[in-house]
Image 1 (tube, rainbow, N blue to C red):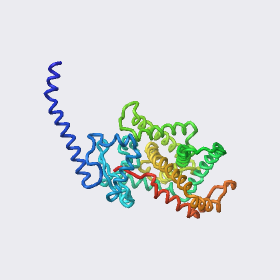
Image 2 (cartoon, rainbow, N blue to C red):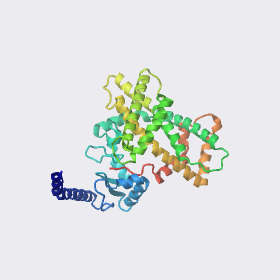
Image 3 (cartoon, rainbow, N blue to C red):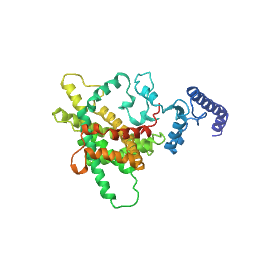
Image 4 (spheres, rainbow, N blue to C red):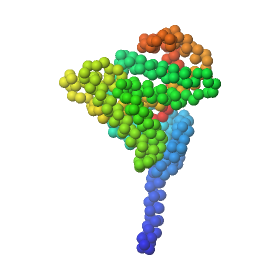
Length: 372
C-alpha cells in the first residue's frame, strides 16, 4: 500500500503536466479553428460550454446568435470535444444546406446528434445516398399529396379548436397555449405522416417517447442507465421501430392497390411501383431505414411548427388590424358552419394570410441555429 502511494506521488507531477498539456492543446486547437470569429476566448476544458447550454439553452443560443450578429452572421463555440459554428446569415445557410458533398460541411442537427438520432437519419446521408433518398421523396410533395395533407391538418385542427372552445368558453383567466398547440401539432404530424397506422395506444406511447427524446436532447450526453440522454436514445429507437412498423403496413396496403391517405402511403406507393416495374429497390427503402427517416420528418415538423404557430397567435393578438384582415380574407372563402374544408385552390387565393405566415417565420425563425 505504501509502495502504491509512493509510486502515485512520484507520477503525480507527470500526470498533472500531461493533463495541462492536453488542456493547452485543446485551447490552441479551438483558437486556431476559431481564428477571428467572435466567440469565447477561453472554453472550459473537455466539456466546453455544455453546462451553460444544459442549464439555460434558450439564453445560451440567444447569446450565440447575438454574438454572430456582430460579425458576418457567424460565431464559434466549443461543446464537449466539438468545435461548433453558429450561423444566422440566411444566404450562407442556403449555401451550406445545398452542399451535400462528402468533403463539405456536415450538419449535426445536435452536438451529439449521431448518438441520439441513430444510424438511419437523413441528416447524416451525403453524396449519392442523399440524392437518391431525396429523389424518392419527391412523390410526397405532389399537388395531390399536399392536398391530402391539407385536409388531414384541417380536420385535426378543427377538432382541437372545438375542444378548446368547449373547455374555455366563459372563462376570464388567460390560458397558456403552449401545451395545447404542442398537442395539436403532435397529432397533426402523426396523422399526416402515418395516419391510419397508429392506434390510440401507439399514439400515447409515441407521445411519451417523444417527450423523453426532447428532455434528453437538452441533457449532458451521459449514456448510462437512468440518465436523460440514455432514456432519449432508447426513446428514439422505440420511435423508429414504431415508424418502421407503419412503413411495413403501408407497403402492404399500397401493394394491394389502395389509395394513399398519408405521407407514408405516397412514399411506399412510389417504392412498390418501382419494384413492381422490375427495378431494384431504392437505397434505404428497408422498413428500418424508413423508420429513421420518418423520425427526421417528425423531428423537423414538431417543435419548429409549434413555435411558429405560437408566435403567429402572439403577433396576431398584438396587432388587431392585421388580425382583422386575416379574418376578412378567410371569411370570404370559408366558414365553420359550411361543413367543408378549404381547398388547395382556395389556399392559393389567401395571399395576405400567406404573407403573414411568411413574416412570422422570417421574424421569428423556428430553427434559428444549426450546429456544424
